[in-house]
Image (cartoon, helix red, strand yellow):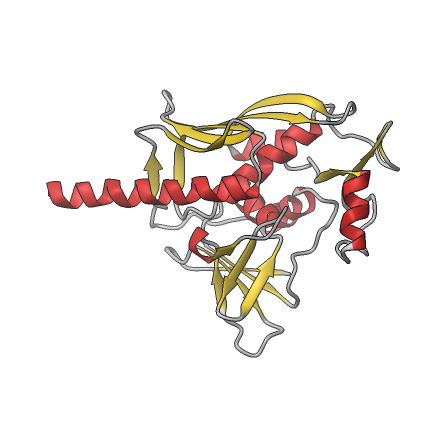
Length: 263
């Protein structure tokens, strides 16, 4: 995987340099396809899998123009977190471009989901992006966890970047039976057995809710603008996160349409 500079207004896009067409795959929600437990983007016959951690790292670094080139269909897993990605991006630095990224200021409430899992967006009184995530997991070593996160590069590096993907041991076994994750070890993902993480240690006591918050941040990057508002999520996953991104795009388009009519 290679991160390439991109001009203002380019946005975020992936490119499969191992395929003949080397088609650009924009990181916007209209190019997302539904695949369980991950975020997958498609353009034509080209696709790229597991992009959410890359998008979260770019959000954490406030990078909004970048071309990511890959020589295979799946983003490297690293240790299941954004930490190595963050360190790589920090090692080369970023530049401030002359064109501001578009911004959506949430002016009314949006809600996606049902009683069992949902995500909500509403105005933020102090003009920032805040994510409040509540996790309830049917496992004694995870249980109920809650996190309030105010987005900034410093907060991302301190509170979210090192939080890793997690799943239960029985879930890992089912995935391996399906041929998924055969090369993944406990280094790349937190696997919870009856007594807690197997062959691994938690980086935070509430690492699971921190990673779910990281996923929300990555999936919101599928809306091609900065979001100013409060996001409240209860047991939300990639599907609902992406549906919220779609709703935010509709709100953005509606706001711009009203501005044009007023002008």
